[in-house]
Amino acid sequence: MITIDVISDVICPWCFLGKRRLDKALTLIPELEVEVVYRPFFLDPSIPPEGLDRHKYMADKFGEERLKTIHDPLIKAGKEDGVPYQFDKITRTPNTLDAHRLIRWAKVAERQMDIVESLFVAYWRDGKDVGDHAVLNALAKSIDLDVASDLSSDKDKNEVMQEVARAQQMGISGVPTFIINQKYGISGAQSAEMLAGALKDIAAK
Image 1 (cartoon, rainbow, N blue to C red):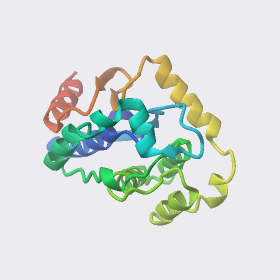
Image 2 (image 1 turned 90 degrees about the vertical axis):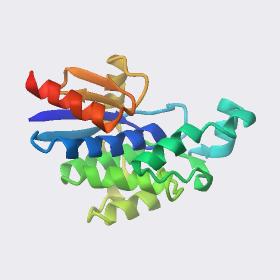
Image 3 (image 1 turned 90 degrees about the horizontal axis):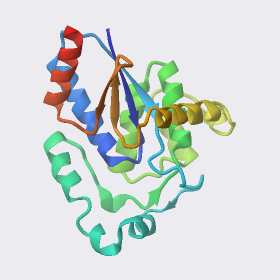
Image 4 (image 1 turned 30 degrees about the vertical axis):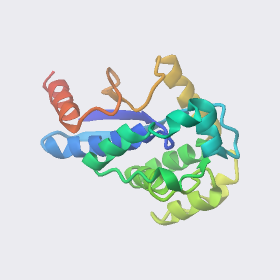
């Protein structure tokens, strides 16, 4: 058994690309038994609970001029790997604490991969605010989870924050980061072929 802890954030576009590439990598090595677990990370811990206007947030961070071309590498890579980025539909940059709580609960229900995919698609393809409880409830219901009362409570908030802190203590400052067998680290949205080769090498050891 190979375990892969994927440290990522829903509002990280490279993390969506990394997920699709990991999915493809696993199809290239069907002989390996692999368990994937998604772990939380905050791309920007300063985002308030209500989120921010995305255009203003991006313009303040990168400048209006750079915004015109900043997504070009992602769009190109997305087309090659089937990632349906629709940047023009996104109006909010949400706080993802509650999205990470939902991912955690889906893991318990053995539906984590489904909810991770749904969250990425909801945000990056459909432009939905994945910090909004109505959006999160709808995504949960689509995989037969009822989390309305949990979302309105503080359940697992501390646990998510502790996991984020652990990632920082490990020196992780960028995502996606893949931790294999709690020993080997791969940073960035590497190609499916590179990931598959790394997993085969680690399995051989």
